[in-house]
Length: 160
Image 1 (spheres, one colour):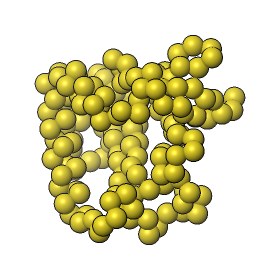
Image 2 (cartoon, one colour; image 1 turned 180 degrees about the vertical axis):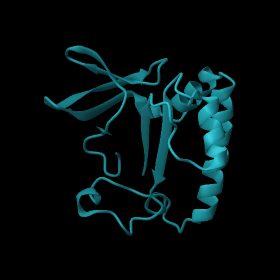
Image 3 (cartoon, helix red, strand yellow; image 1 turned 90 degrees about the vertical axis):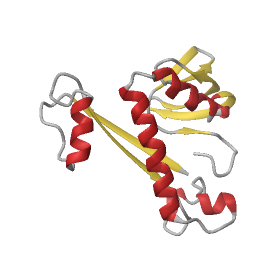
Image 4 (cartoon, helix red, strand yellow; image 1 turned 45 degrees about the vertical axis):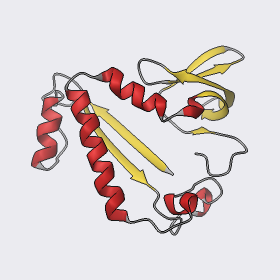
């Protein structure tokens, strides 16, 4: 239903952003002293434009709710929520961010999942979100920490 892309760089020149975004990047150390992080996100409002290879595993707000979605409302509410969490980040309230994430991720504990690695498809059972924000997955070999990529919930239509 949604996706997040995060990219980091230690380049001393922050990416070209508008003036408000540039202020936020500098506040997080975009001057080269720390990595610059650029985040992007997308929310599937309706299923109208899914590529063929995603139709069997993607979903949308309209598909899940069975009603038409007002894009402007989604945009405004999303930006307000991001602004609030950005405030938490700047104030060092990392526990508040993680606690909110954990509260909204009930499948992060006790759910069978699979993911792809260069060595092939792996499977396991979710074991929570750790203090660094990584998804913990129990496997036969022990605990794996997933920091990025795609995790799938096999056999559950509409799950990423």
